[in-house]
Image (cartoon, rainbow, N blue to C red; front, side, top):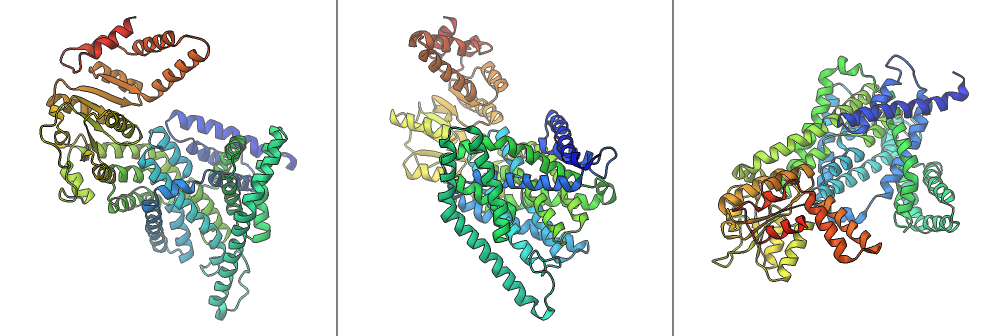
Length: 612
């Protein structure tokens, strides 16, 4: 193929194969990233057929790294990090240390040098941003406390890796590789002094660049974007965003000797403070996605799948560190901070994989002659397998959480909490009855609780987050600590004398069990349940639950009502239409009027509405 067309060929082949691989991965319910990596393997030198130009793919990958890091900086939120800093900062640092030590130990056992083991361990310690966010989003956990902690944890990991990318070239000579700056021309007797000088110069350059960006960049970058926006040209605005991302990355490397990744990260971070940041992110997203895909394809091209046959035990050891070692460390750290076991398990599952930063670090290790090619292949094998297994890990975690929920004594021992540390329920007035039992005090549950309190209606909150329970009790509210499905927890909330059970947590399986437990103790209790699944909604309605609300459906009804009113339909007609649509969307409204299922005075009203 003529040299002039090699660039076009590698871009075309990379995008076409990535699309096919991503589509197949999506159909198999795997993250598309797996498909992109497999696409790279397919056009790489280790498989038959078309072989792409690895040098050109590497340069395209550099653009992908710049845009990936620009996106990380653009979405970096100091506020989100500070909200969970008490656990995210120490947790991420300790987990990185533990995983790095495990990787270092394995590397030394294989006869590698200190530098190779260190790079290897660091590469295994950091999770993929893409995979983590997608996994949390698919399970509706992104806006929960668990999700915020996991994202904050990941932000700390990303910042640690950015710092590693800066310091590793300066330390490479001392670690047995080729120094990123200065080389090896120094006498052995001055290696220690030269190391500190090199390290000091590197940190000084990074500090100078950081200061320039935080002082000058915070003024210049938003101003330049504002000038582009004032032209009214979308093309110029998009061009300004890309020029800033690539220009700052390349300029920082040329002037300050810092990595492209750090320059791009700071470009995104200073841009994030502008009120134009959301538009900038939207405009740059297509190009960012395309080059990020090419980055993963180029990584796959470097992978030798023969490592799976040549060294299966080494691959299993790597996978064990990523999936088992990191998970055990994460669970231990979260429980040490006295968070619920469910939170610990979710964070462990979220972080039990590696991705883009691992690839970047492995590539840098190869460049600096620290990491052997075998190490890169093992890292890529670990990434492919851990990302592929991550959905199964989440499924296993959910089963384990359900198993422990039915065994509160075992869960309490695992969480290192005793009944004396926090009693199940605070002292309350005797003879309480006719109250509401509210399970979950997150964003939805807290809003319901405030409404009930505003009307001075009695409510008892059941919450498994220790800190929330302490805050509620400090405010004078009745709160039960524990998993609501565990034996004795709903009894502590006097479920037998309650009038209403409100399940504000989105866990579908827990909702079924809670309704069954409540009805066993109080056959006449009314029930109100939240769900995110249409199938689960129909099942609960068939079981005679008083009202089942699905967030997406209620959002659609609310927007429909406003749209009808805005277009001239009277409020009465619009509400009648929405109420009728809501009733018709239920599979069998009559089932909800079954005798003995609680609050019969409410159900006929809903039936009448549906029949109008």
